[in-house]
Image (cartoon, rainbow, N blue to C red; front, side, top):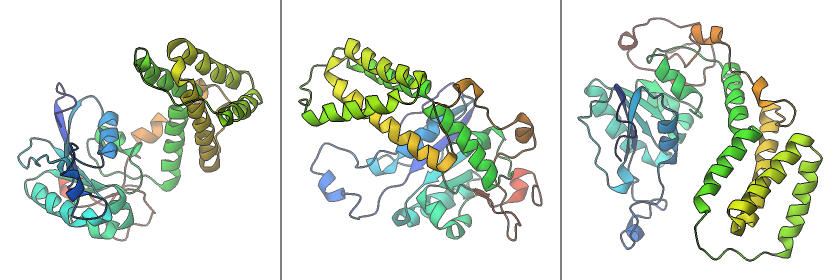
Length: 306
């Protein structure tokens, strides 16, 4: 894939390694189709979107037949992988480290088997990176510390921003604008859809004025712009109920309980104290969520960061 941002001063290179012959890769069937790969690198694309604007980002999908550029000028090389891609991840990581690149490993493999990954990277991300990735880049790659409680606070702030009613509605309406002049045969309306609609109307109606405005506003705009997909919009509104319930279980969050403007990010004082990412090193006393490993001199620090 081409660089997603070309005007930035610094460069990040993200790699989706090729799949080994396996059930998941569908290598032999793919050759009979016009497709390049089975799974797009959605995780890396998400990280590219979250990367600060001062960085250029290139995403390489080796599973789609793209060749890895070992001579890239990128300072940061990020590699993701599943367990069955571990051999290939290490085959890519070691040469890049030999060229002096800062190698970052993440994904399910890094979370499940961190000890095996540490010897092959400078930075290891355990768990989700939506919150910590941009902070890591803005910290100029410094190995700093973040406890699980601090990470949870940051994720709660991020999820509340992403799934606030206004933000979710804006994304729905943005996607809706693409369907204005599309001609297709929509799925026939079924009686069960009416039951779903009534249940959702009852749910949103009981959550107060803001919830009712959100529900009926989305439906009205859909009727005006793309009436053929009203049924699909009802499904999206049902999915939003599910998202809210999931976040309520994990983060004790009620989207209709307070205006979006009251949601606050972690304090500037915490950021200035350097609680952006995590420290590596054997015998570290705190349970850290993401671990920086490798050469400490490369990052200009020594010892544990409190």
